[in-house]
Image (cartoon, rainbow, N blue to C red; front, side, top):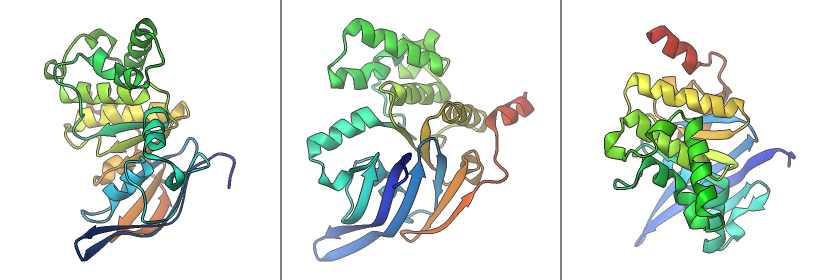
Length: 244
């Protein structure tokens, strides 16, 4: 295994059972992601995108096959160990934000640190404010989600995902609920994070969003049917300037 291989999946199979009925969601997935990569995963509904993302994110385990995250075999971990991996090594960004509606942006960003319970409240607030700075939202720290735009809410979600300095950011349709310009602004943040060395895995059904990544993986019927380097990559900063 390469020294900087962060995701190493071999022959991943996932079968869901309902009574006597079996649904094979993934058919022998082989996927490798090196540290610092930015990949997009595409495919139609039912292609296995969400299942694959759930396994990468340690929210589910494969029926068979090997998944090593930073060299650790995930299937060998207990539920508590998986929870620790999710909290410390993975950052999640979802389409629906999943923010606490009565909590401020600052309090939402703090949550992963509260769960870890290993940092004082003063240091927790300082780190949360620093992370909000990274997504240009520090001045909105006291605002609740209802007082923020969709794009701002997604930036809060990104800040929350970054708070523990995870090895990987997993973004599942992160622009799905946003208008075109707000979506570009979110992709600009992801590209800046990737330029700074962060590994990003993004699931999307939109071609132009996928083209902001550096490598595209296409799924169909639970299989990877194509992998390609994106030669005509879109740079969000340029697109935003063009809209001005």
